[in-house]
Each structure stands twice: as C-alpha cells, then as structure tokens.
Image 1 (cartoon, rainbow, N blue to C red):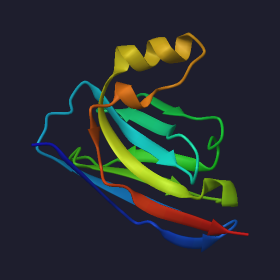
Image 2: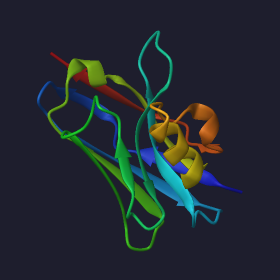
Image 3: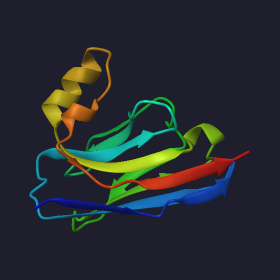
Image 4: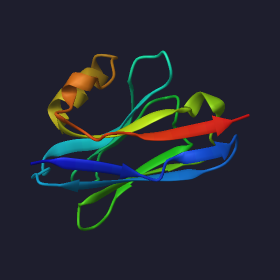
Length: 133
C-alpha cells in the first residue's frame, strides 16, 4: 500500500524559508513522477513542482521558479521541497504526490498546459504552510 507522509510545514514571515519533506513507501515509483501540489483557501489545487525517479527531469510552475527547489534522496524514499523567499500568496496546504507518467506530463507541458490532479495516483494528507506579510 502506497503511503506518502509530508512534514515540515509551519508559519513563516514573508521572505523566509521552509523545507518540506515527503516520505514515500509501499510502492515502486521507478519511471513515474513525484512532486507537490498546493491548495490555497477558496482556490483549486494547483501543481507546484515535480521530478522523475532519477531526478533528471524537473518541472516548476512559473509562480515558484527561482524560489523553490525539488529534490530527492539517493535512496529514492524521500522527496524534498525547499521553499525560499516565501510570499503570502504561497500560503496553502501542500500535498506530496506520486504516480504520474512522465509521458503524460511532457505532453501536457508541450501543449501549453500544466500537470493536473488526475495525472497523479497517490496523494499525501497535506501539510499547512502559512506565510505572513
């Protein structure tokens, strides 16, 4: 049974940093993307970033480029999201996700779109990030 467990959320002032972690277990994620979505109050869930099992391919939403960095450990059991220069607009529940096929994501991006919720089969429970001005 696949489990994704997030940690590292919290409250920070604008300009500050947080590092989220996601522990993945119970599945074979080779060949699939893992990453992060977020959902702000009264808004739809939106894709933040993702990377392949090997870490060779990474994709970021424009809203976080240059501020957020996604990575994974050598054992391929942890995925991290380093968030720097946080803004109040980054306030949201952040979800670790897994199970998207790279080909589906690449096709979506090539068509001018972005990864969607239905691309990912597995979701964590979420961790709250609050950025105050």
